Length: 94
Image 1 (cartoon, rainbow, N blue to C red):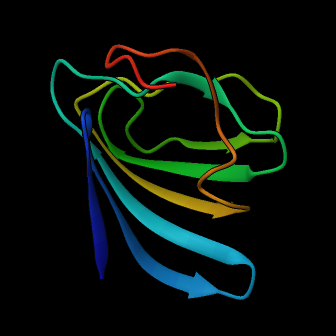
Image 2: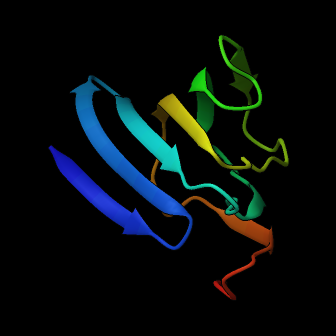
């Protein structure tokens, strides 16, 4: 539907159901997302492949997290994409 290239891989919006958005996320080998948290966005991450294959994580707002590649994930979240505070970023994003 709506794929966005990121320096660490790709994030694709695959569906919206009410206030929830469902994304397919690919984190490339030897890459990782920023170490970050969201003020109001809650996420459920389903690992389809990667270090935590067959794992489902609930990441409440305020939880600091990062995803290491290679990984294929499904993210179910509420809230806005702009709701991100990066603490560390390999790509010098703010």
